[in-house]
Image 1 (spheres, rainbow, N blue to C red):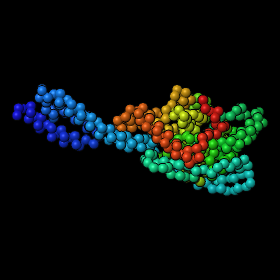
Image 2: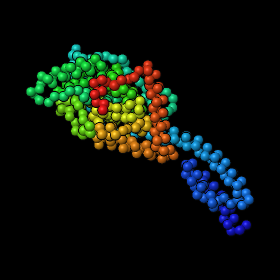
Image 3: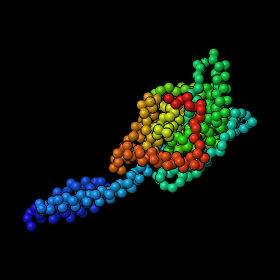
Image 4: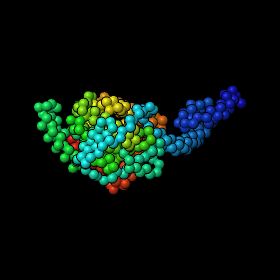
Length: 395
């Protein structure tokens, strides 16, 4: 045995020993490929073609094994993608709020909130499915009937200057809006420009405000926010890329008290208090931003909430939704921050699974269609329309 043969004889056991301690199949293959010239003796010149054929067959078998292992690894990786990079480790405490007085026309609460109940319009009782974040593809969803979150909207209705000289017109527009929203069961609550809070659809019922929108907290995935989330709408308008709120001080004060009451009553997490622009999707073309009200201008801090614009959009991370130039124009910098975080998570998940980002998106989009079919079966196959009053916000 010459020196070169002796080196190879010693190297082969060493290479196998090292390879067996590499858990990642892709990394293991790269390692073996790197040490192959040292560990595998060259074939006799007359047998090169036989060695070549054997190598091809070996690589084919190895490739099949790696593909099976990679597929299982992808399922593990994409199951974890809905988790956000921001956790509510120390959420602000929710104050205890109780009902002080109730009459035929209104309710008064301990934090100063007053709700006008004259225009209540019951809809069908809420019922929805949620899917576990860490096992989104396993088994059926879990049925719930308690509100899990809040979606903030704007009516995108006609606005006139908020000043004393326009008081009559302000009142007239507000009354017409209440009538319209009531007939369409568009929201659970409406806050007019004077800061008055109207209950439209009772919290026990679903409202047609968010369609098959998407959100996720650290535990559950939500696909039908009509059923699972409460809808609160401000009588207001938003513009492309808008960064500052146009809500009146009275509206913000009322929204803060209403949010405080609802979070206390239903145990709603601050992470599940989000804007319509953050959750709205179009299932037909698999794009986010079907509606863009409150895209980047919602006053989270003034309502006692964390800045949820900083959370990655679950529609992208959990279900592979995409976006276009129009959405980016409307989003503004605060909402786009959530898009960038989601893209970073997708890129990391794709790299960890050995897939390209487009291939991973395709798998996640199939997940959405499968989960959506299950949700639709529960709701009788309806379209889960979004509130007509908010449709004007689609651009």
